[in-house]
Length: 476
Ligand code: ADE
Image (cartoon, rainbow, N blue to C red):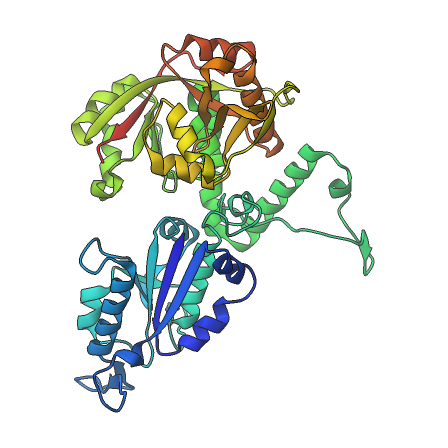
């Protein structure tokens, strides 16, 4: 659930702009709420004035501190946070940090967001200092007010809130998620104005279609966005080098980057550090073990460790553990093997098991059976994202499995009374096929000592890493 509050002198503009189509429907469904507050309603000036001349002279008028502050107090009251945790308050201004997809993804995780729209020549600095947490610009041009930028931001954020888009997948696939622009698309008729739809799209060959689309994306990006193109090429270079070093060991980093989830924070011949902001996971590997300390040191370069409380680190070499423990407040360290399905052909799924997506109504049941975590919020988020699947036998839930936020297959649990009946295999086969059909390479982790799961991976033809990786969680 996402709650937007917009502080503005033109509330009608926001209300009208936001009530249509997809966002309007999400509001009707109760997944989103949006309230536009008129700053003028909060002025103490008896003529309803909210602006005045700037000290020191200059063109135009400034919005005064008092009504803005009073309006903000009212919003805080509505969020129930009047004297608790600060609510992100975003001031739209060309002087702010550029708005990007990554920022949208980060803000989509909040429960309340407040937007402050300026008008005239701006707002008295003193009230900004007291209430604003984020200064954001939507681009290098100057608009007459912050209303359109606020609507742009709300649109980009809202479509990432689970349930807003019908197809849970589409937000993952499009432009910018992989540092590439989207490929051209075609619909009926096959020929229009003498132009035919490219043959490959009519061929029915899924792999060829994907290859063509990627090629087109890369070409367009090269032509229109040299900045993104360079980033993409650099990523490809590291992916190739990790594939050579060991597919099973590095598949998590490779897939995370390929799927456009994480970002390379630092990489060289010494190692690599990838951060997946949405999943709150960092992946770290050292390619030259003599330089483990240097590579571990990269985690501090990412600025504020306080913001990474509760994050997980996937540590790819044991020699990184000691230097990381010196730098990070480590809570738990779980040794795992990594298994990857390297073939392209789908695996058969047994017919006696029905597999379907689980909704949030299954949260309590799932938590009662899943032994690996007591993180309710995480499992609820997985259910909301449509990434947890249940196996039903005679209409009853017999087990479940799903896709973790950073992309690995896991959360596999088969209820005791249903074990040794091929249910785990059915769930894993289903997930493997699903990922293959999305063009992904399926992979997952097996906790050291879980012989049953390791045997299953090998029986199903997955390659298991020779060395251990370590899932390190930080204190909350
Ligand atoms: N207000 C005026 N222009 C703006 C911009 N480009 N981004 C955000 N807020 C603005």
